[in-house]
Length: 459
Image 1 (cartoon, helix red, strand yellow):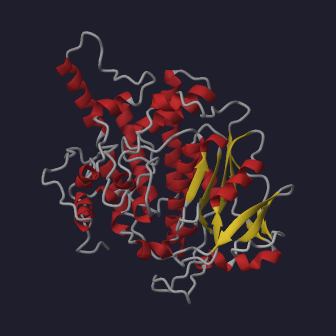
Image 2 (image 1 turned 90 degrees about the vertical axis):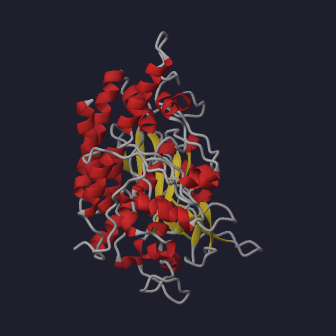
Image 3 (image 1 turned 30 degrees about the horizontal axis):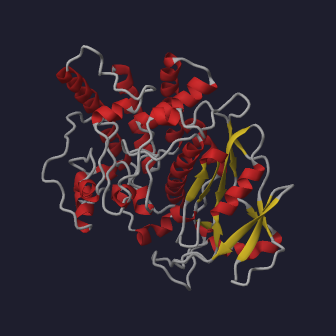
């Protein structure tokens, strides 16, 4: 039953909040957003002989059609774009002609997913290192540990299934070997640096290990070392490989933690499940009632601005007159799958967060940079609270990159083939979302996809 005080998400936020202007973030205007999807980098409405007013009307019409489906990034206080407002966007043209981009080929087209490494018999001390130090009340405690076994961790088979739809047209397979943590024979350094080995059947890579600076995990692995290992194990026929780990990660000594990273040019990535565990939500200040898609609730966005010392816009946001728009449909559908405390529901929530980041990091392997044209799965993020506010979908600019890479380069298709690919990809994602309809994000995403497909038919 819905709480009588539950937010009804009456008005939605379709553009960046007031914090964006205060922080210096300027979203590309509608004309630039449309131009960013083209190979030429030019706005297709700007045809010789067409008057400026006619061009602007066409741009405004196109933007108004896209807005209910693809709103702008929220940019609330402490979001990545508020902290780094000058981070440049990557257009389709920039992506297409990026010199270091690896094109998928008939020989190198498979995405490999390596399952969480096993802990060998001599490394059993690593097992409790992946349990967060939180008590039953969700509060941090050095004396308490929450056993991950109480909530089953996401399965690699489910990750592969999701990626098979998200990167539809590219084979997604499990890495054929089981990685394992083994002792590293080199002595610890004078500064107390500890090491573990990450082993395959014919190689072992030294991985630095330390406690997390915030004390939440007693063991934290260096992601750069894991990425070095990934480079060594990349199969000849692979387009890329991503390694999943249950232990917490860090990138450099100044990091508290890092959930994932990709070396795009090397086509390798690593993602940790650790910080996505729902037991940490209270510590991270996550508002379950306003995770995507309800993160676009304007009253919620305004509240975040006020908490960050920014006065919200007095001007009403763009109002969508269509109650059946994809974003509205997503919010309504997600409300029908309220979060529960059952292990199944908690695992589903955990899984939804993991695959969003996995698909993001593999996007970097395909040459995609961070996005700020729209709210998009390729946005950068500054923390867990922002992460759950972001959508699982690709915006029009980033979708143009994937459709070209798969339907254009890998399948040698023309424009019609790319359009058909987008449809097929959406349908594949609908099928996957239906398997997880007890999870709010997937129920919302499925409804968003269905509404988007209906819009494609109309247009």
